[in-house]
Length: 463
Image (cartoon, rainbow, N blue to C red):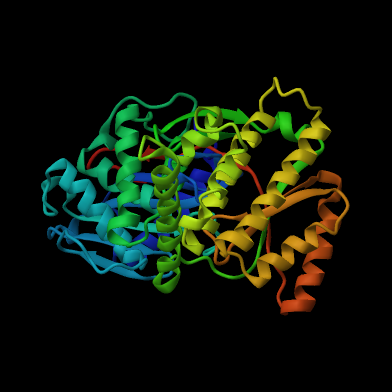
């Protein structure tokens, strides 16, 4: 059963239903055949920034906020087109599949999801199963906060379109213990295909060469745990945070109030980060390995296979052959992959450190990552650096770092629960004095991955 409660489903569906009827000009409810409600979460990533596209380990978990979509078939709109709307009263009528210009307009996501899903199924847009398709979406993640609202939208769209196209909403097998009929998860291979389709929306339609972590997390996460996800094999282990946090510590997110947007010149900057890291890896392979098989991923996991020295020093020894960008991004990438492995070990029950020692070590790793993001990746901002300095002045804070792709978004920090109120108050006061804004703060509450609830009660069914 998903972590999204029956009460919350009922409240969200009721809200979306009113907007749906108004937006699609439904005068009488018998004009609608209700089909489904779907939700996909945003994510927090505890460790492993800018290493997913290099095949490294990452440590994402799903949040309890994300994208919600209600789908119905409107009888007076059965004209071979798909209709989408947002809670902000924006509407889009899709009448053909195919590519669009590279941008992150919400319509680009819709076109990408419909094109990839229906082409995979071999179905045209005017298939009988899709006649009268109308969907309205609602997002509950702060836009530009770096919590991957875009991936949650990708996944929710794909689930909505695919479930309607295959008529899976008519299935009679549901998860037990739910008031709303929650469809059981698809087979692993189907979930992996969905993950890859969601990733392709970002890369092929939006034009940003992101890794696959965000989409994978939105689909596969489990409540209360993070995933140690191998981005090369797409396999993972789930780890609870309890061995790190105990009863006394927690994570928070503090928003820099600068919107994280991988568009335009920022998208170009992100793509350059990736090409620099890949270029650095190729340089090491050529000059240290004589073009034998080599990746930063393998160096981090099995350094003795390649060198007797420290793996970071091994990469640094190629400095004469690197461009400045390759040097910075290569050093960050190998160091971050090592830090990620160390964080995973801190969360294992067999870790020999005490809970307090784990807490302090995790903060040390977080701060080291932020320094690398600031100085090597150069993806931080004045606001993010200000928050990072401010939290580290506070007693009870172990450490923190920029979370996500950079260029805005949030600082993730680890701190004692009894310090939360004081830290939030002090940081908000300092931030307002410096920037004239109150920075938003969000608790980190971990939920399950995406789900689909069938609302179908037959052709004449009411909601």
